[in-house]
Image (cartoon, rainbow, N blue to C red; front, side, top):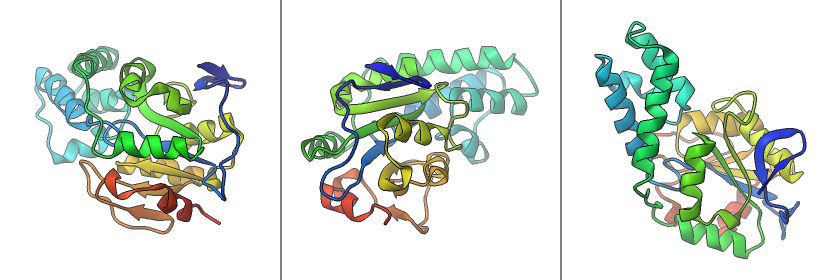
Length: 238
């Protein structure tokens, strides 16, 4: 994969399609952790271990700052709640090292993930991976999902801001030359939903750790197994 002009770090496949066939969507963008692969529990356990080493026990109050958030965001939160027990940079390095160790053991694709990716690719709809995880983690997971299926991948640190800001989704759409409003984003966390909706994408939510309510332009389903190509086409904003 190569970097897109003007989008440092965002990776696009040289043969990426620019438009979706048959009335859309122009592209379907997937979050990674908790949406396509069962890594949210691994991230939570990593944050638990790092927090515990600094004398803090994670509770439900920590969920918004951990679930669906970047390493940098979670490190800043742990630095704050532990009263600066360790430098924020050291906390971030411990989080990344612990998460990579757990990921390297082989995260499981969630039920229906591989089948949905294959169906969309077979229908000629461009796919993107838009993650709040850093590139080193994304590249560990991609082979198990079929890296060749994704026309663009965007990782944390490759846009000026990461989720919950819209920058990653705007970058993915720009890399493919499509309008965000013609795309569907599949997400599992409030942070990811906020990013996709702020970018203008129609959103399909498959909650993992945190409950998600319905909202305009948002469809909530219990699992990827309930999603198919016609459903995604019908969900594009017009």
